[in-house]
Amino acid sequence: ESVQQILARQVQDIHFDYDKSDIRASDQSILQGDASALKTIFQMDANFIVTIEGHCDERGSAEYNLALGDRRAAATKDALIALGVPGEKLKTVSFGKERPICTDATEDCYARNRRAHFAAAQ
Image (tube, rainbow, N blue to C red; front, top):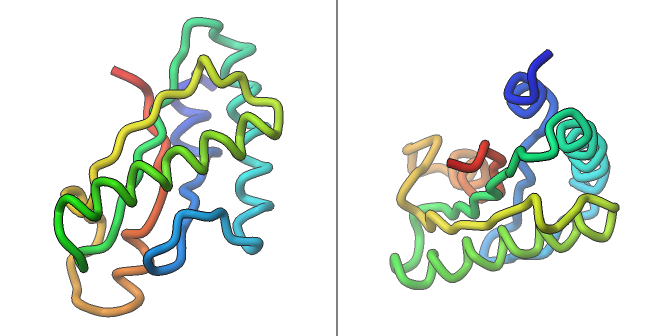
């Protein structure tokens, strides 16, 4: 498997509660799996960089959600570093509410959009 395939298949999004940027206890096992997969990726390709994208649901202003997305990405990065992932291999960016994966006005949809997503750095 290539590092891109491992990233797409094994590294899962971290989800957040409404208006929060702390890692939920229920996502700790996902975070640990992500840390393990990311360490494997960086061992396979020392030059590979991953971007942690902070996302929000559609509620709130664009400015507020950009700041919240930034806090979510930073919290995810900090938690991964605490699990031994090299911080210099992780970048963060916030998309706020600009890139939803679901556009229904339902709580289930909002919950899916409140996430930290992992992508290969460009």
